[in-house]
Image (cartoon, rainbow, N blue to C red; front, side):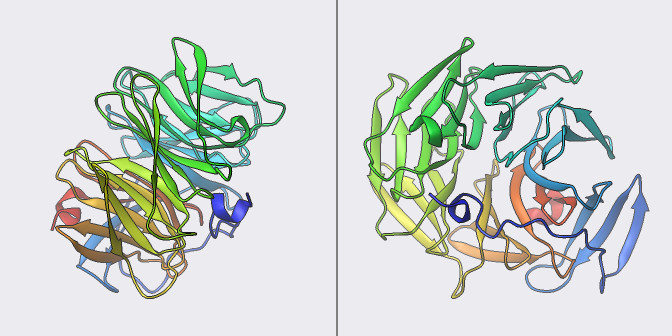
Length: 334
């Protein structure tokens, strides 16, 4: 499967300065801006990374209020805490670090293609690695369950894989095309995943049983997956420009627009709102009560790639043009 499917539209752009918007305040490196283009009037706060060559890729919000992010081709993880960005060394430059998730204990797990491993960073910055036994490694998204189990999409293992008690357990699928990418874990321990080339959503039960759900449209390329508070499974359809919802055996689709916007990044808030990024449109989208609203980001060439919602309802995004951004809960919920 081509890189274009795993990283639709992903390139290494130069760091861009914000232009044509009103700067409200600058504090601790953060810039507050109005979202005034399309959609509701809202604020956004953005934190630029320190170097134009750094590309924030995956993002995760921790229970302690920290926001973590990966950086492509950089030997560090980023952490935003109390309004300050810091960089914690990993000891190895990342290659396509698309998987990142916060654990209940304040640590994070991340995909580590360069090290042929799934890696763990403690709040102190200590890194440990669990090696994978395939000759090559190519990994998609990653999620951590309430029981501490770590799930990840393992293309080179032809599986949706799980780390439990330090051991790697592979759950194989039947699709000959495959292309595992998105992963999410429900509170009961059920894991959900997407097969980009197979146009399927997978359910991996707590007993290890794998069930596949075929999508209505061929070549829709499902990518990110998330589980809502009501148990509904949400997913992006990159080629179809749609948001999908799976409940029971029924799939419902919500078209985003009449042109390719580059859907990538998915988060569901406690109130059931579904947030997603539009890489080619420089916007975030919110699907709530069947209605989609766009929040145009303030910089002309904004490129939001991944999203996360924290426990307060703030919406965070990693922008591959060199920023970590946030829409405050009061504006996200309007």
